[in-house]
Amino acid sequence: MRKHLTAAMFLFIVIAAFSGTVAAEASLDTYHTDDQGNEITEAQVGDTVEYFAEVQNDENEVEDATLNITVDSDVYWTNFMQEISFDGGVTFVDATPFVNEVDNPDGTYNYNVAMGSLDPLQLIILRWQGVVENAGTSIKDATVYHGTTPTDTSLAVLIVTEPAPPAPTNATTAVAAGTVVMQKTGAPIGLLVMAILMLASGILLTRRK
Image (cartoon, rainbow, N blue to C red; front, side, top):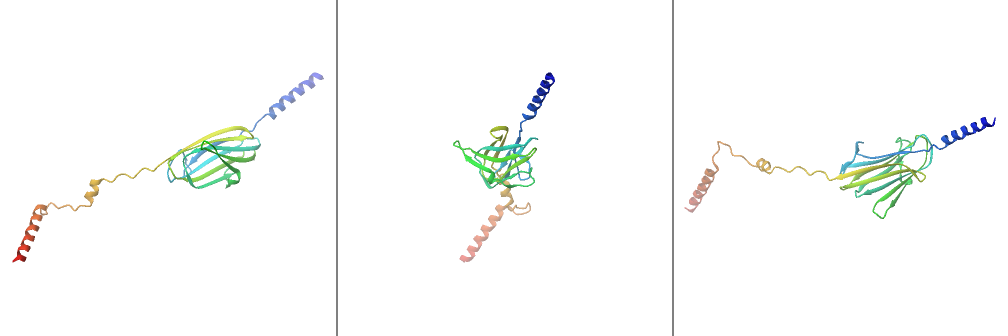
């Protein structure tokens, strides 16, 4: 009897150990898109660009989830807007109440996003949108945490360049377009000039008489 009890207790402990040590791990994906929704790594000055950070929880509930984004960038954005969706992108709300921005001594800055509890398989999407105003490079290094434990990271890099200058105008073509071409059957220019001079001389002589 004691042997059977010992075996049953051992089996119970093993089952409890395996079922109780399953850790929730949310995955993270970050990327930039253009105004058509296409994923990009390059843009031009004046383009509208969006940055997405998607946190996908697994089948286990999470009580304290945060997202940290370290930004190293010399690119300025105008018309900046930040939104967050807690239902997989169905609805977005202003992300300001959930985001804390911290400036770092090295010139970078952090965005700390408090997501709170995550339901099983819940998808949270952080979205930034703006117009890039100058050439440069923007590096966004993101990490998702369960409490103080990091579970996944993602890096998104955007290179912004100046638009290509317009093609130079062909000077020869431009001059030719503004020139009246003499017809082959017309009088040579030398003869025309001589005739004008002779006519002018005749007028002067007549007037002198």
